[in-house]
Structure formats: structure tokens, C-alpha cells
Image 1 (cartoon, rainbow, N blue to C red):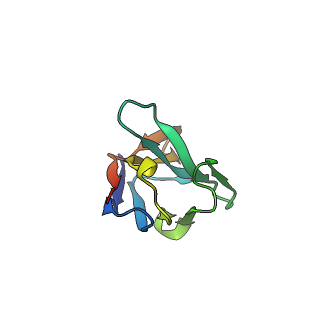
Image 2: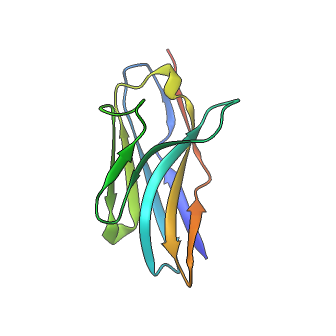
Length: 118
């Protein structure tokens, strides 16, 4: 069994910063991409940022230059540093990972709420 456990969400004022963390645990053989998606009320889930096991990154245009994804492969953990937050960044943020136990599969965290409001 595999679990992705997120932490770090909360309420922040516009212009503020938050750091999200997501740790994968369980019977893990290997992890490929790890990343973050978000879903705002009434909207579809969208990609925020991903990072391959080799360190290649991909960001949504809306967060480039404000958000930074990183990962610690030894800890099976991915981070999202979010700076200069805007009200439109308000959403539930979900951690995602491509994990191999016996076969490769997609795994999701339970989600963490990020609210940007004054």
C-alpha cells in the first residue's frame, strides 16, 4: 500500500508565501514524476508543477516565477514553495506521484486547502 501525505496548506494574505510538502510512503520500488495539481471551486483540476526523478520541471504559466517545485528523492518527498500568492491561487492542492510497486501507477494525496485572502 502507498500513501501520499500532504502538509503546509492554510490561509495567507495576498503577496504572502506558503510551502507545501508531500511525503510518499509504503511499499515503493521506484518513483518517476512527482508534482502538484490544484482544483478551485467549480473548476477542473489543473497542473501546477511537476518534477521528474532526474530533476526536469514543468510549470503552469500562471505560476512560473512565483512557485518552485523541489524534491528529496532519498525521502520520497516533493515540495512546492509558493511566493507572491494571489487570490486566484486559492484551491485545494493535490500531490501526485507515479510510483512503482509491482507495476507503475498514479497515486494522489488527500489534498490540502490553500486560501489567499485579505
